Amino acid sequence: MQSENSSVNTEAKKIQTSKVPPSEGFREAFLLHLADTTLILTQRNGAWCGHGPILEQDIAITNITLDLIGQSRNFYQYAAKLINESSLAPSPVEKAGDEATEDSLAYLRTEREFKNLLLVEQENGDWAQTIVRQFLFSVYQYFLFEQLQNSKDDQLAAIAAKSLKEVTYHVSWSADWVIRLGDGTDESNERMQKAIAALWPYTGEMFMQADYEQGIISEIHLLKDRWIEKVKTVFEEATLAIPENIFMQSGGKNGVHTEKLGHILAEMQYLQRTNLGAKW
Amino acid sequence: MQIHDLEKTFQEKIDKEIKIEPKDWMPDAYRKTNVRQISQHAHSEVVGMLPEGNWISRAPSLKRKAILIAKVQDEAGHGLYLYSAAETLGTSREQMIDDLHSGKAKYSSIFNYPTLTWADMGAVGWLVDGAAILNQVMLCRTSYGPYARANVRICKEESFHQRQGFETLMVLANGTPEQKAMCQDAINRWWWPALMMFGPKDSESTNNDQSMKWKIKRKTNDELRQQFIDMAVQQVKVLGMTLPDDKLVWNEDRKHYDFGEINWDEFWSVVKGNGQCNKQRLDARKKAHEEGAWVREAAVAYAKKKAARLLTKVA
Image (cartoon, rainbow over all chains, first blue to last red; front, top):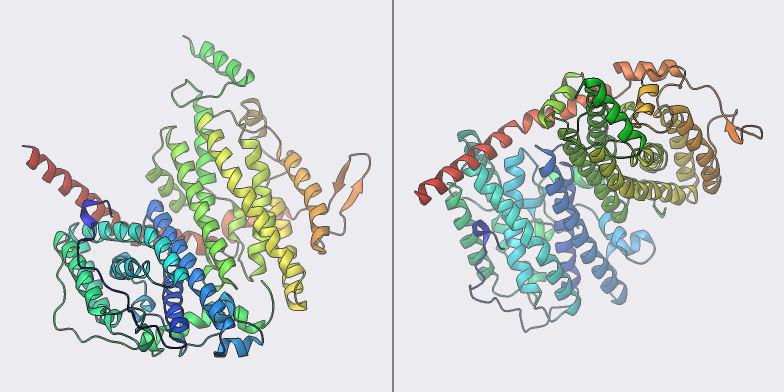
């Protein structure tokens, strides 16, 4: 967060991790939510590789994609470990006929089992839409991981702390682009405003607490305050307006998605599913 | 100094293995040949992102997906420093990209073949990157300094890609009957196009002599191709697969493998634009460039505004 454009206010009040331990299965579900979200954004961003607006930015967005898939694998691997150790037997374990792995969790769960945020499954659209999606998500992820790095769950805390370094860059990079495009040409400003309008309805869900987040994130509204504060600061510099009175869509965290997710999974999972049990 | 003397000094440097650097005097033809070759190499890296990018969304495991993304990104990086190396000779990146889009500049024809199955990711790594590396290892010692240095870095990453490609095939070769079949099929489809990557036979190649004298190239097309074949014959045994050429036999006199006739009609046909993906690849590059135009314009506009604001502040 060194860039003057994108300094996240770390002075804001500390969000407490809850003192109540999570219920059985909640931790696994929360990890899957984190893993699914970063994987689906990997899937989306990955489509830019080789098609970016200029070579340097093709490389930059792909770097972010690589960070995201790395995070995703960390969360899936940890979730798999917990699932295998627990008496709970979620569907992927039964389906693979074996123990849970990062791949069984990513490739053999269905669209109703995926817990990713609706925001990340939205289409790439133009570069403006991809940038806005990345920015809105990365700022959220920044404050979330800032909190999770203090988790009592050492493994989760370690993944969050490592990821936070990466996300710090994602926020800085995407904020710079929000400002550049917002305050660039009339056309770029218009495209940005359109992208914001398209994506804004999917931002509310980030701050609607799912059952499995209880006991892991408490006071989720504080996350929202910090998120909106940062978004406002950057949008102001970018001469972009925040939409008002927008109905917020939700459901992703609990497996009720937009129609887009089914297509993403069909494409992503087909090889694993047509060759069950094969090693790659 | 007379042109004649300059040329003499230039050739003496080359003969003494002293690198030619951007500000050194060089014959026009040397400059042109290098721009053509380096930009063609850069375009090949960038267009080469497309056939592999085709499988990013469908990679069958998270590990393979991460490896593939990193690999395709490496190619973008290679493109970037090759464009920079070519720019030292006085041609802008913009000009080079325009030449690619207009069809004036070429890229390696291998990328006009489609990547049809997951096994193609392995075969491309093993055979296509493998063939490219032999060329690039030679180019680490090419006479133009910036190009030689770019290739040193490229080779490090490419040899990693080749190993990853081979390992991808190895897993398939030890897998289910369907995976084995997929592996053999990919090798069958990529083998001959990979051999064509080294270019026409020496007897048909127009650029060889001068390029050898200037040490732009240090080995001929046929020498490199033979080196590749001798290597691949050994490696395919490790996979337990076969190469689709029944004329491959060890020749004790030559100490090399003999091989079957390459279909040069196919080679020239693809070069001329009749490959399955010629149009598709170029269209994808043009589309990315055109759709990115407003982004690049906005970035320039913003940079100008920012500079103007700074000036006002200072004043």
